[in-house]
Amino acid sequence: MNPPITIDASVFVSAFSPLEAGSDQSLEFIKTVSKQNTPVIVPVIVLTEVAAAISRRQNDFELAMQLARSIEALPNINFVPIDESLADLSSEVAATRRLRGSDAVYAAVSLRFGTELITLDREQLERLPKVLAVRFPG
Image 1: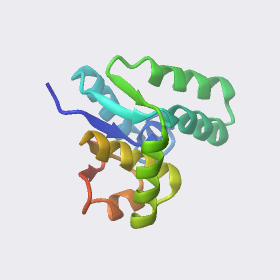
Image 2 (image 1 turned 90 degrees about the vertical axis):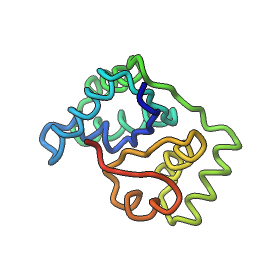
Image 3 (image 1 turned 120 degrees about the horizontal axis):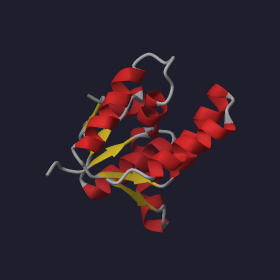
Image 4 (image 1 turned 30 degrees about the vertical axis):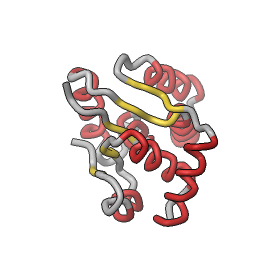
């Protein structure tokens, strides 16, 4: 069995944005993770982030909701609620690594569960390697 991973919303958004550079690679990565039944541990805000990004970029409410539901339906996905403890860890990561709030939440989930963080976010890739494993999809 593959070790669990955390996938940042940037990868899901890229996979569902066919005109975006790297979209094919992101989509193939998500398909491979699903086929291999790799456990995926993500903060529940991934649903909101993906729906918001797709709706805003593609101006398509129906597609945004459909894609959020397709993430919910992945058999290997585990959603982590943002409780006070995770919020505290996220705050610490945000402050010490100078990350945006939601980016710090993904890092905190990765730290808490010992997962590798898969992301397209440049700041996460540059600022997190000293505290957790982080890489591009693929």
